[in-house]
Length: 319
Image (cartoon, rainbow, N blue to C red; front, side):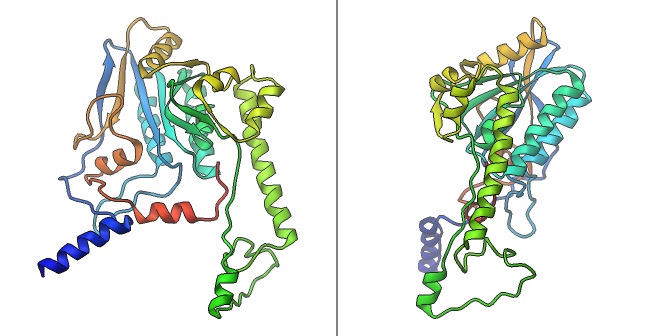
């Protein structure tokens, strides 16, 4: 029995596609914690980390499941709307991007909060603000990036797997009944037709244009030469992003906090966040987005979530 247990543990570690969650007690509503500063005025830090998606974190049957990233952002902003002491918003970003719609929804929620409340917003790109992560940053009045952060990847992509030759080699054939010739254009069971490739090209071009228009509106100092370089969809260092007018300054979270305090026109303020009492620390760099969602629901993330792999393999339009 001991040998079988050891083999099972080795299999989980080698395969890197299993999640083990340990109960950490009863889940409690997030509480407000002070991260930096002092005073009555508050700067709320909202964490946008990890893949932008409407997918809720995976959990074993019977275990509590965390909210999706867009849902948690909305919950934080709704709570802040009821607190007149919240004078500014700091959006801490560490994201490689995600689906087009989830990125757009998070952008919309932050921009709507700013417009409704008049509260200024500062985005702080910690390690990476790429693709959808940068799209979210565009909702801010100012963007601060860490000196070693990666910024950009302005564009859209969709991936389609074609396993038809492999299936043919195995003697497997797909038979699909469909209402239109392009109904299954993203099926991995066959290659794209010329017309279907044109359809995908059109979708990508249109949504990339929406991304670019968002950049134009949010970054008016970026000229056509800057936009042409962004259009390559390449990631840039913070110093290069500053040259291209993609960000406003290079600095750390303390600098982003100072910028938010300045825009709020208050002399002193506290940087606060809504966090679970079950753990995660009280510093501005602790508790990343996905891990934070799991902690807030009373569970701890140990191994790679298999639904992450499914998320990466899905044929979706992505920023």
